[in-house]
Length: 297
Image 1 (cartoon, one colour):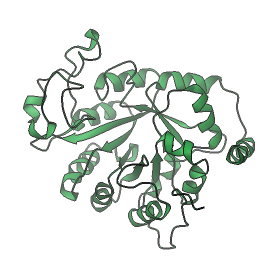
Image 2: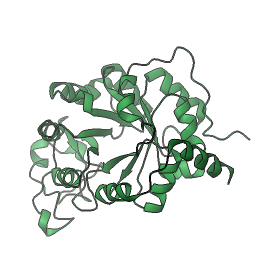
Image 3: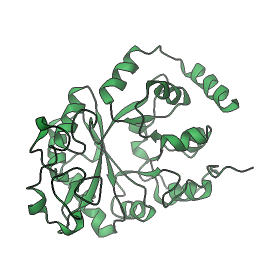
């Protein structure tokens, strides 16, 4: 039976537009997977805030994943939900809120009194912060559907901040992925998969999107990988990096390390970095044997 994650080989005409980022994204032989702080160090600070990003950096993290949405007046900000109530003291939809009004909201008190008054950062705020820390890389997820004109709000800002080589842009939405390819051909781009979204990880559709838009990475949820043990290898065969999300369990870190994924997105980057520092080194050939053994189970 053919798995819905079976990935055919890409056509010979596959564009390589964003593939210059692959040395940054692919795991070198013998190297550990990249550790990516999910919405910053979101287990120790309020998600998608500068406090969370700084906590991850101070814990030794170099990759930060954040969520991008637009205010009612088209300012790009960090927020996961389309409503304000879960992570701020505001209410209503972000798309109906101006950037000026959003700036007055508290995005930290819901997490702890220590973080009271933490603002919702704009993309511009985060890019300024990244410029101050040259070792920081950003994985920017565009939530929902963005037109090329809207996606340009992100790509232009990344270029203007001179951090393009340290940024990857990703989305679940294939329309948004196409928009990013149209206006960000010089930016590394990726596709997110969760098995239930607009692209349900059908092999032919994933391969088509990789080929059509020159994607550098395809990033499935951990549940998708766990359900299809050969998926990471087949995605690698397309010539893309594979970063998975969101994993906080050391036992699962070990599985993913052995499976050869290139990066793991986690709420606890400091803990995973510590685990990687203490884990036994597994030679590349041994990892290949482990992957084959896991697929036979």
